[in-house]
Length: 630
Image 1 (tube, rainbow, N blue to C red):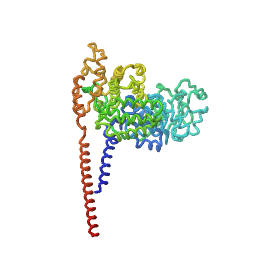
Image 2 (image 1 turned 180 degrees about the vertical axis):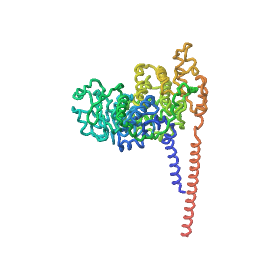
Image 3 (image 1 turned 60 degrees about the vertical axis):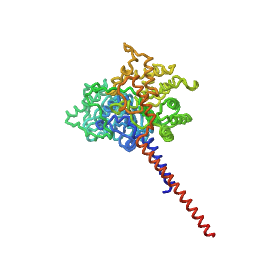
Image 4 (image 1 turned 60 degrees about the horizontal axis):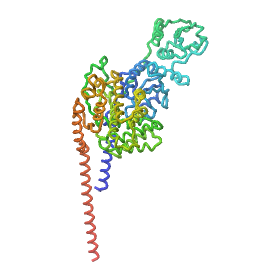
């Protein structure tokens, strides 16, 4: 075989191996959260393959929740969205309720294209909408979402869309019998529902009953003085029924709610011998992973509490960093202005203080340098840079292991939020360790906290979580921190404050309850006899846990579960030395090296043989030439 061909084969093998370690890591890295919705909900689950085609080619309007499955606020909002979907399931021939998980990496490009900046985001799409939709929620309550959606449906109908829907626009005529002119033959009774001008109650009732073809309902708002006076309507809502001849019957509303009014109308129709059972639209099945939810009626307190390891894992740090760089930041369509400055500050502290196990800091240095030279950058281009520099400086990260210390009892628990806290704790401690040796012109005591503030404000996916952090930062004077040790303690105190607020929350992992840390068994000296914190001891504890010497490079299986911090540090150091002393290669790595070694040896042998053959042929040719001359 030609040596050149062999060289090409070797190059392809090594290049593909390198790319698979970088790009293929998406499949190896544990998925951070599965869908909050499944086939038992009345929510259609969309993804990157079907969202555009479904909305653009559909014959209904759509209202879609774009969410992030690890986002605490999204988890709290999920029951509201499910109830909302159940409440309008009868409207599915008009508008369909759906959801899309932007934490799924495959969905990232679509979420970026649709400019989803906060989670959850509610978007309304008109029939055949080819744009990015309209923000629809009035408030993040079932009532607020319903009101926002009805307003969009009304606007669609006013603009000529949704012509086949029941008319939800107010009845404007001052002729109380004008409705008779276009009354379909199937309609036996007509209803006027009088309501306040800004109410959406009438529209909801009309849509709830729109599949019953024997009735017709029209809204009459309070500002229609002609009809309110003609029928002496003095309270709102009020309901009047008419048969086909126009004889009015005032119906008493003992419960003036959406459900109450629907009940009164159905009861009245039954007394007239008219069926009120509509044909329900065919149910949609959510095509998604069926997450195993907590059994109904089982309280979190009934779960056994697992012993908590007091160990800092390199895998958790790297997973948090990679999710941040590969998924969260790239969700932005364009990064400029304040967001760009926040990104530069974040990358600056990462390149200085993030402990890359393989020591390949060139990855972060080059990423920061490239971004710093640009006036703006798209999220897509940023992700391209991350991928490019991982290839250029391969290997950057250790072998993918998924979450270890931040692993939850289910994929929606802990994970990335836990990893991000861990990341910034580590950065504050490493900043303190390096501070004295740094150039005074390029250092600042609070630079890590400010970078964290900028990142959370501009990039963190959970909108409610970010708002709480910004509010807490203001209350606790984040920007007034004077020393690097104060920065470490500020973040510890803030973390405990968040733990206290979320303790017992629906987002809390039942097997890993949120507590004030460090636990007594991890640092007995950190508390006084009456339970008060001893700041000096807490600072020592934090520096030992989050410093470079405290990082554990193994897995959960080969680490002690509950050991006091001071005792376990020695063991951790020994393990770290052992890990770093070895080559840290996997079986696959070694196999590749063997293949490369054999291929290289074969190339050398072939080259030598070729040279020998050529030399022999030259000598033979030279001798033959001499003989001819002779």
